[in-house]
Length: 80
Image (tube, rainbow, N blue to C red; front, side, top):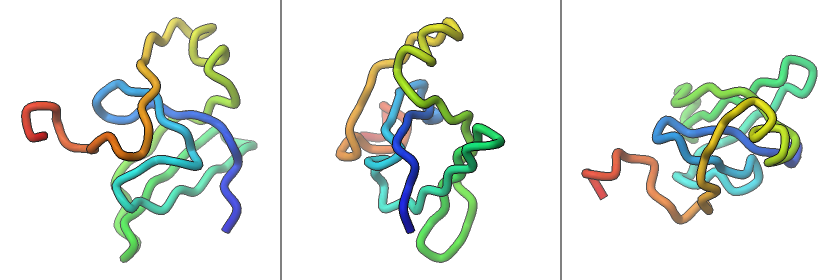
C-alpha cells in the first residue's frame, strides 16, 4: 500500500510523517477527508488524526508540534 506523504499529530502532541509513523503501525490516509488512521498489524485502530500535507499547514492552524521520527516511542514520555 502506498501512503500519501504528509504529516499528522500523535497523541503526545508530536508531528510525525505519514511515511515514518513508527510503532510498527499501518498508516492509511484519506486525502479527501484529510484523515489519517493508524492500525496495528492485526487491524486494531490505535489512533486517528487530521492529515496535513506540509509542516507549514500545521503551523497555519496554530499547531506547534515537534517533528519526530519513527524511532520515537508512541507511549507517554514517562513510559520511555
